[in-house]
Image 1 (cartoon, helix red, strand yellow):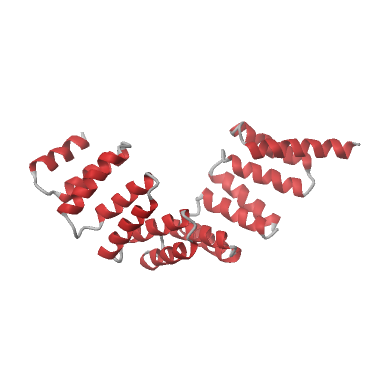
Image 2: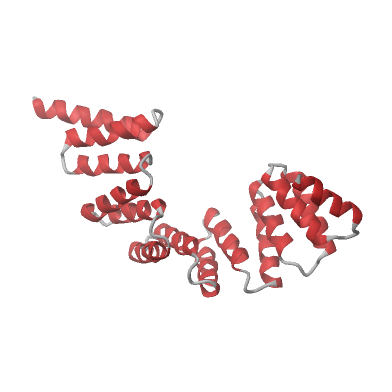
Length: 239
């Protein structure tokens, strides 16, 4: 198998950085991050000017929740190859995950300077702007992402949420429905449509949407609460 082939390459060639990196990647796929990290470190020792094992070691540290070490290796990968979009993107994501939004914005923009068609960088830059409270900028980035990959359900869902913030229920509904066109079992979109119907006081329709969300995920706490609220609202109207 692949692990055996890469292991053999490591054994028969001294300081084979490429073989160590490849074996580490395979071990990461198998969920053995500790063994993978040892091989990424060996790859760095064998090929100190290679940016790839630094990216992979950063990913391994991130998978273990060690964001500070992940950043060290993402930055090193980017210093070795300033046009390495994957390293810039990984760095931006870890800054987004740790809520360091200005740095997240910086590195998503750098990623897009390298590759304007990096649809996930547009999407996550939109998420960065959303957290910053910049809804219009977020919407623009989500739309750019969709121009590149129109079938992304998450981009449509994010647009729906952003339009909700702006109280634009019509556009929000359009994008939640588009979400369901591409991912018909996405319970969150059904929940959000139920929420829109609640705001419109169309309680029967709200119950229909929320019931569908619960059919897909019976432990969806917010949907359970919304269903109870809709049912209570109908009873109150009947009095």
